[in-house]
Structures are given as C-alpha cells and as structure tokens.
Image (cartoon, rainbow over all chains, first blue to last red; front, side, top):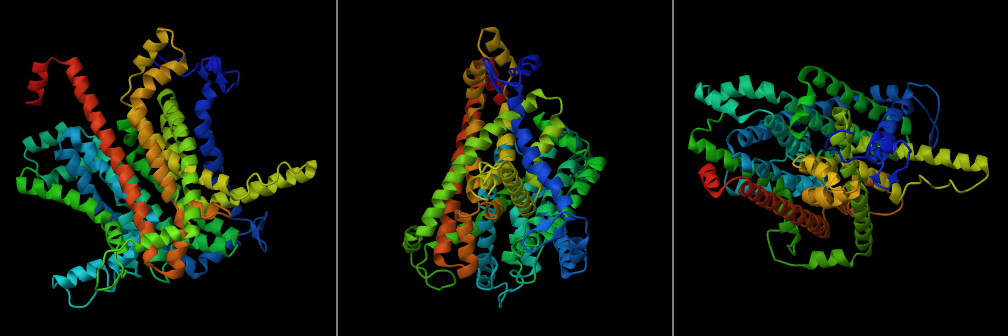
Length: 302
Length: 300
C-alpha cells in the first residue's frame, strides 16, 4: 500500500468482497472504469462490427457486407459529410480566434487568485441545455430577429440579412456558440502548465505580445488548442440537431445522418456512419498525441 | 495582438472576456424576454404577461415530462456522483493515470448521436440475447432487462455526466493531502471513518458542485435521452417535439426560459458558494501558517 493511501491493500481486496469490515474492497474503485468499458468501449467497438452486418426489414443479421459503406459513399450523404467537415473546421478556427485570447489573457495578466473564477464564468452558458441554446438562436438570427433589428435600428443595414439562419453560416454560428467554452477550458488548461514567470521574462527581454505568442505561448499551449479543436470539430460533425435547427432543409452532418438512418430502421448504415466518425476521432487523437503529447494536459491535475 | 502593458488594452481585454460570456448567454436572455410578451415573438408591441407560463403548467404532458426528467436527474446524481468520487479516488492511487483519465473523459469526445445510436443498438442486441437465453432455459426471468426505458436512459445519462463529476471532484481532491488520512489511520480510524470524518469534509464542496452539475446536465440532455428513453417523455424531448411540430410557440419560449433560468440560478449559486468558500479556506490557511505581520507584508 502506498504511503498516505486509504484504499484497502491488494491483499485485503483479493477476496473479491466488495465491502469488507474496514471499508470497501479495492475492486469497488474499479466499478466506474468497468462501467465505462461495458457501456462505452464495448458498444463503440461493436459499432465497427455491426457496420458490416446485412440489413433486414426491421433489424440486421450477422454477415460481412460493405453495402452500408457503399450506400454512404455513393449517395449525397458523403458529400454532405464532407461539407459538414468543412464547416466544422471553420467553427474550430473561429472558436480559436475568439476563445483562445481569453485563455491567454486570463493566464497571463489576471491575478492568479481570480484566474479560475474568470474561466468558471464560461460554465454558466455551457450548463444551459445545448438544444435550448441552439433553438434560442432562431429568434436572434432570423430575418426579424434581434441581430437584424439591432443593426437596422442603428442604421448599419437597411434590409435584414437573411444569410444568418437556415444557411451554413447559421450552422457555423451554432457550433461556435455551443462549443466555444471548450476552447477556453482546454486552452486555459494548457496555459496553466506554463509558469507565469516565463511571461515576465518575455516582457523583461522586450518581446512584444505577438512574438511571445508565436514563440512561447503557441508551442506550449499546442496540446490544449489541439484537444479543444478536436472536441469542437468532432462534435460539430456529430451533433445532428445543430444543422437540423439552424441549417435549413438541406443541411445535414454525420449526427443527423445517423439519426435519420435509425428513424428509417437502417441500422447498418447508422453504424457505418458512426464507425467513420469514430475512426476519424481516433485517428485525430492518435496523430495529435504523437505530435503534441496530450498527456501534458494532465499536468495541472496530477 | 494585444499589448497588455498598455492599460487601455488591458481593460479592453476584460471587457472582451465579459462580452464573450454575455454573447453566449444573449440568446437565452432574449427568449426569456420574449416569453413574457403577451404578443409573442416578432410583434412590435410588448406587453408583460405570465400567461405563457400558465399555459405551460396547465399542460399535462409537460407536467408529466417534468416529473420524469426530475426522476432521471435525481437518479443520475445518486449514481454518477459516487462513480465520479470512486474514479477520482482510484486516480490518486493508480499508476495508470493517463489511461484512467482517457477512459473516464472519453464520453465527452463521442458526439451524442453517435454514442446514443451505438447504445441503442447495443441494448437491442443485449435484449435479444437475454430473451433468447430465457427461451433456451425455459424461464421468463431474463425478459426485458435491457428494454428501452428508464434504466437505459439512465445509463446514457451516467455516461454523459460521470466525466464532469469525475473532473470536478478530482480538482477538489487535488487540494487534499493524503497525510491527513494517514494520520487518522495511525490514530486508529477505519478507512470509512478516515474518509467520512477527515477527507469528505474537505472535498464536500466539490461533491456538492458535482451533484448540481450532474442534475443540470441530466435535466438538460436531449439526444441520448431521446434515443434511449423508450416510452416516457422528458422535458427536452417534449420541448423539441413542440418546437418542431408547432414551431416556436410562446409556451415553448416559456418552457425553455424556465429551465434555462433554473440552470443559471443553480449553477450560479454553486459557483458563488464554492468560490467564496475556497477564498475563506485560503484566508484561514494563510492566517494559520503565517503571523499577522507576514500576511500584511505579503498582501502588500
């Protein structure tokens, strides 16, 4: 048993009793991880298997067929998927431009005792139902919505702008509004690993903010920026109700294709699209980890 | 780029930070404003009314869905928070920290539609397998174990909320020094007593914050619940069907506003309480370890 550890020792827990006389056995502490394996890792892994199954009238049967993938790649779905990747990438860039300066400023210039408080402000919008926030964008972005009324009232425009809703622009705005806090959180997490004296040294040596950003902040915060970007990209691609609500009739992404396939009882197609998403996610995380070493992000909590 | 040494830029950045939070909240504030207008959205007239809230509370479907959603939220709290706590305790002990964190946080990276549909097909398969097993054994005890319903929706909710409970408790726990447990154990306390009387009071704020987060997240979640809930309705599924079927009606604004305001109040209260408590603890800690003159010196 490690010093200072109040978990029962290996020998105490070896009897496979979940609760002993002196507190819970060590196996109890593995229950959450076991839950994650049973209800997350296994279903996700099986998704790859089910994607090769054959479709039946109301279900699917074991077999090996590439029909679902063929259906996906030879229809408009693949094109829509590619387009969704494009607007998710734009949402990542916009989130970085808007959100990352917040993380940098707070870490660099805000007194250390209040840094977490400022970052925690972003929890507030994040905790409001995502679907409500997305729906709430309709009266804000519409032709007679808040933004158009305001711009017309102050005389910037004479005609309402109709490109903000039921267009790809609406989808991008929705994605940025939904996932921006993640860029702030992960950016700040990465910046926390950077000691503040480094910025003071930069100041003393006369490096301007731009040079400090390029040579110090960007390389050191890269794992956080990458993790935030992957989160925004994958969710932008996978959360189906954003294009459904803000993108108009033609706008779909991987999430909405999956939802639609489930609704039409085409389970292998739903699994194939999910599998493509999962492979994309794993590949991105693997590449990111090889380049940026994402474990550096865990430094503040280790 | 910003030159923060320039005080104008410094204060502009503060305004920028606050404006960003405000912009994220703006749509929600706007629908709250609309929900009190007798003439609804788009009308040039604005007359204050509570009518849309009355319409909402008179709707039986909404009342039923609120009960189901509350039940789901409470059950998620009593399952996900202890799981987050156990995982955080395991994190402090295990040598495979990275693997554990990746596993516990991975639900955040899998989009809701993908995870929801994978679980839906998983449960359908498990249900078929358990029924086949029951048939083979000639018993009906296995029937309905994984049928879509409250349990499956709860599993979806736990997957969604455990990462937040885990990270909130872990951050609070990182301030706790294990040597205190060691001292309690040396004085003869059992593991339970050492946890309950020494460790828990110090991580209590994190655990309560995790409870609030889990409840709000479970209450507000849509996609996984919609896919896994089976026969009953939750608040968000009713809200979405309202909005998709009848458009943005005034009572929809009232529904969305009520839940958003509740979320903001609960989370705001938790944040204010936990932050002021942390500040008080830090002040007390400084007062204990340093003489008054040193504190004045250091703060000056």
